[in-house]
Image (tube, rainbow, N blue to C red; front, side):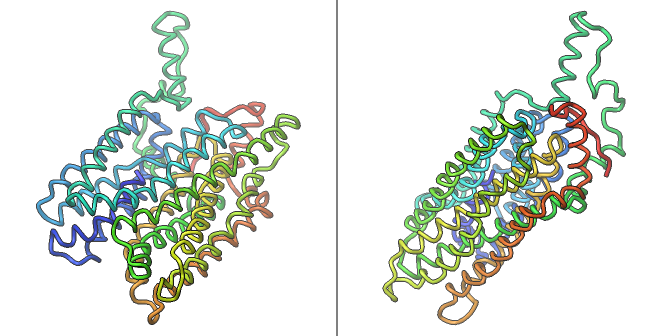
Length: 454
């Protein structure tokens, strides 16, 4: 679904020309999608914990694909804005897929699959720029939406064959099977004796849960702000590429699209860089027990990679001077690669830490994380290009990236606080402490169902 957001910036100029609107107005299509996407993640995630991951993902994907059709056939600009808004709020996406990790894997073995999901998400955020360039160059504006529909339909077809993973749903099914076969006529699953399945009060509590965790849980709040701020920086940074490479080196539409490739390579390199840490930690846990390493260990590699964000942004700022000052374009791409490394590391380490802390409620916890990421990214869609065009004097591009670099220092600093003060922070977490107690009662096994009231 991140592709649906990252491909849109290339549609700004074609949409502006087609509907006779300003480019800034055309960017509202990006903003409205991301802002409603942030709300959609919050609304869908807890329902997947009550009714299962499979039906929620299928319904979400169906609605997302449906809303691409009126956008592609839109007779006016208002239709596109409405379709984008409905598409965003229909998106369950990231928070539910992260919940799948908690369903299938124990916290000691979740890191390899989690790293791959985060890689897919990050590449989805940046690959849209690579694909969007050729669409802008060779196809009409409608194809931005038709291609989103094609990708979405293929994704939904793949998800169709995915089995359910939510433990409470699987227990319900097994109980029903045993009754029907006569194997055990008196066995019932955790949800079967509830009538109604979800009361009006419970429905409200389910919806409130992600917001409650975001506002009341220190782990979710701090890491969501950290991850969200980093995501907004990345979206702002990517918005600058067309300005930087067109003004600095005269890149055309296709060359501007290819300038995003180094960031995708950075994501892949960082993905593999985590493997030695995962394997080493796994060996330690196998030898000394699951509790041999504290959860903060999952942040350790991030301590080394996070500084790449301010370093990369500072370097990108002053290698963007262009050929007029004798600066080769490869310099800016090297520094953009560093930004990509840090962004992947911040995303992976923050969600890894939250899934390990919240277990069966990780979808709600990650819903809070996704809310912050997408809300701040949506806001950035409106200020990114004006900032790069209007801040400062003739070096407005360089000044804008320097501002981002300074702000990114605020993103990096809390990471070290979490690493050194994490145990004290977790002691204040109601959900984390509750799940830890249940885990001890189950002798370290996964908790299938735990209800925590807001």
